[in-house]
Image (cartoon, rainbow, N blue to C red; front, top):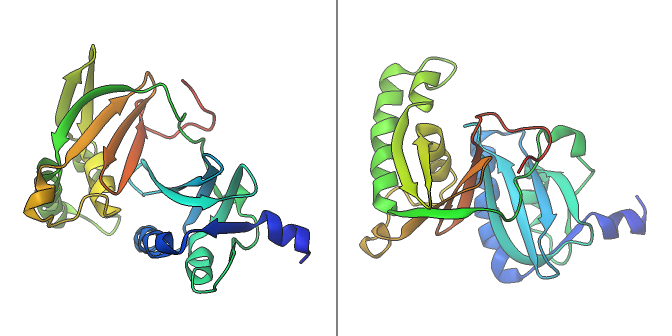
Length: 220
């Protein structure tokens, strides 16, 4: 392993951000123990970390840090272990071939409306009860995941929210399952483009392509 390889496969992260990235990665691994994450350099001081959720939706959180390359894919378990080592965080061997699909565009979204966080917590609770009743060895039935549980209207658009997005938002801990009273009215911002629906919560965002499956190439 060369020094050049190490310099390209290293993440510089503020110490205050390590615990938050660790919590994010543990959530990712709880959903898929073989998960990979995709790191994207948003700016010189910001790095976005993306993951698949198992609900046909992508999760994203932004951290204060620096990435020497525009884009990198790493094994989530390796990255979690590397957080315990002081200094530059080694991303390990490239895992690019393990990432399927394109990232959503960074801009081009219209603000549709805001929904209080507690509404999503309640929907997730009711959905979990139904999933427990009707799940099989393969998990919750597709009919439950695809069920439209909200319809948000605004900015000349009408955006259906399926249970998949609700589960993705809460499974990643972007809304706590039992938020303090002060956080229950926190807005979950619903944004949409022609191709993507985006939910922005206090601790992160989830995205889903409006056609359902995540495309192999970016469409706007």
